[in-house]
Amino acid sequence: MKAAGSAFARPYVDALFEVAGSPDAVDALLPSLDTVARALESSEELRDFLANPGYGRTEKRGLVASLAETAKAPAVAGRLLRALLDRGRILKLANVLEAIREQLDVERGVVQATVRSAAPLGADAEKGIREALEARSGTRVRLRTELDPSLLSGFVVRLGSEVFDASLSRRLTRARKALEGASGAA
Image (cartoon, rainbow, N blue to C red; front, top):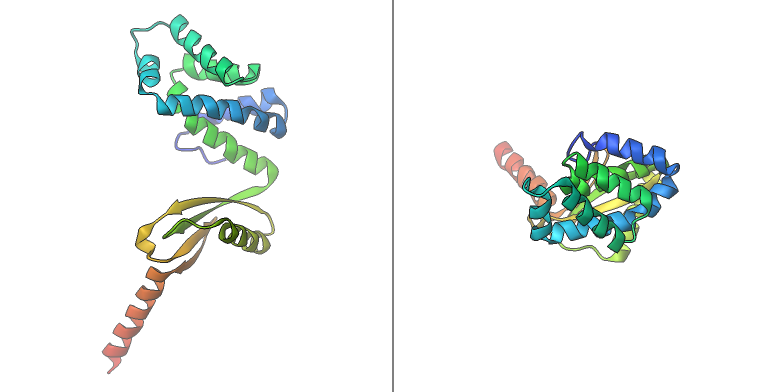
C-alpha cells in the first residue's frame, strides 16, 4: 500500500481492517467517516478548536463524539476517530481515508489510473477510458480525474508505470520536433 501522503496512516489502516474484519465492513464505514472529514475540511473553527492545546482532551473527545454521532458513525469508526484525536492526527483524517481506499483497492484487485484532461470528461468518455484500461490491464480500474488546461485538448492517462498521451500538446511537440529535424536536414 502506498501511504497517502504520510507513512503515519499505515498502522491506522491495518488496525481498522483487522478490527472491522472484512473489506466490505471497512467500506461500510466510509460514508460516515467522509461526513466527518468534510465537516473538518469545511470548518476552520472546528480545525482551530481541535488543534488548540488550550482545550483539554475531554472537550475535544466530546466534539469528535458529537461529529461521529451526527454522521451516524458505527462504533468502529468512532474508535478510529478517537485514536486519531488522541494521537494528534484527527486533522489528517482525509489522508487516512485515502489510504483506506487504496488498501480497499488492493484487497479487491482494483488498480487506480489517473486521467489528466484539458476539460472535464463526460461520463461516456470516462466509461470508455476505464473499459479500455481494464481490457488492457486485465483488472478492474478506478479512474481519478484531474484537469490540466496546459494539455490544450485531449487527455493523458497514467496506469502504473504506463503513460498513454492523447493530448494536443504532445502532438504539437512531436510535430515541432519533426519540423526541427526536417529543417536541420535541409
